[in-house]
Image (cartoon, rainbow, N blue to C red; front, side, top):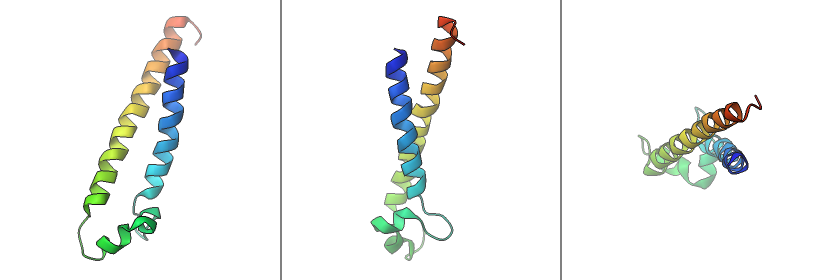
Length: 80
């Protein structure tokens, strides 16, 4: 169980880094490379940007939950 949760934590950590880098900042971002800059000139946030926000929040919740689960598992094993 600890190994599976650790794998989930590692995968979600990498995904969080990628997703955060894809967000558009004040001066653009990696999302401009994938067509995000075209719709941003029209004003408002695009559907792609909103979906990216939702995906980032979802991965963040899984990431946070896996940290909590790992902490509880280590505490119950007496390893921490």
